[in-house]
Length: 92
Image (cartoon, rainbow, N blue to C red; front, side):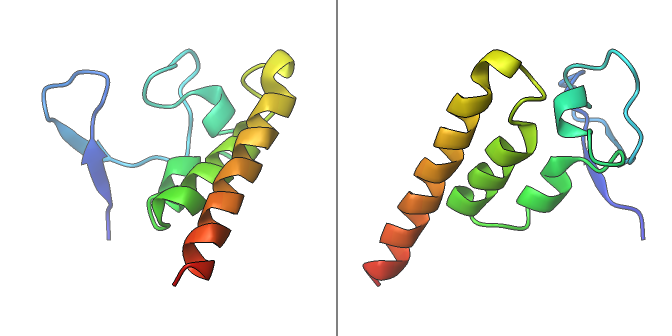
């Protein structure tokens, strides 16, 4: 089965197969900080989660990869989303 997604770089609604390979220099469709894990794109995982969990995973996955200067900030954002999800679950 081939999974398709909209090509975000053209905004023309063209669908194309997902790839685990990151073309060098493609900062829109395959940014290096989201494909650092054996070419797996984080979006392929987080789209299967709810918003809070997906964002937490996104921030953890890119922490230190996009910018060393924002590594701690990204981890704090992940914690914020995890805490938000815990509050949501606890409130029933």
